[in-house]
Length: 212
Image (cartoon, rainbow, N blue to C red; front, top):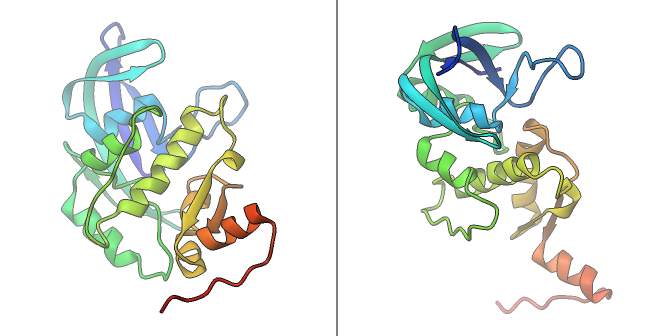
């Protein structure tokens, strides 16, 4: 897990402690999760709500209550390295550390540091057309991958991961982003270049001429 929130519903007697991670974790099927998936409705309190009166939308309707604590954790190899009590999810120190730590040659997930604007895009309704614009390196691909992970979770009864496809400009790009979805617990999503996908549909092996 990477975060904790303490939330009490309006009709509740005391605050419930919820730990948020990249996926649900329970000791036994059917029990209350020890760790709540970042894509769950209640997790939206962590990303968008401030301390005090807060609410989140779930299938049962709008749940209102009091948010008493938002805490971010940095845990590496089972060792708690640091934590921060926050009001907004934006934490310059945590973001800076995440950027510095990402020295790998592959893109990493940002589940712990998703910003409000990014979260709104990720959690937008399935039937809402979305265009995400931004300069190179602004996080468009990262947000798109997290939105895909969110949709697979939110609409699990309608879609399987196999129903999604990522179309990239080349295989180097696909290799660069290949770790993000598995880190979020999503597997079996097809990745392809436009050229390979076109060849598969055509059913023939053709050589694409370089116009340059």
